[in-house]
Length: 94
Image (cartoon, rainbow, N blue to C red; front, side, top):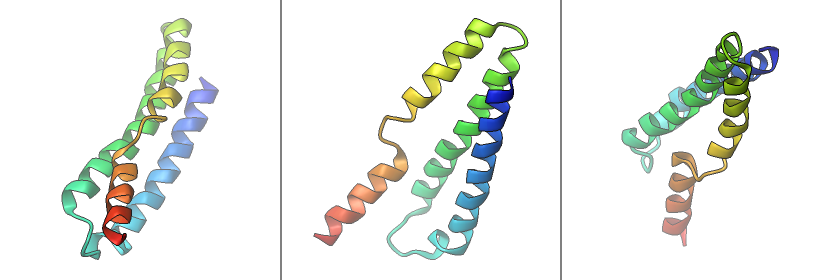
């Protein structure tokens, strides 16, 4: 449970940084649309939320919690919305 809570807290701090960057810089950037910001924000909120769910699940079933602890990092190895936007911006630059 401590593992999941510490990762959820780490993800929450990451989200604070993400939303600060969105508010200060990305919101006004001419090449970044609001749809991207919305999808990327949803993607980044999922990380701490899933770890919080896994931590709470450890109170009910340890195996289910361990399964989520293994599955979450594998899920984030997939290309995300942010990765796709960066690829699109780099393609436009070339």
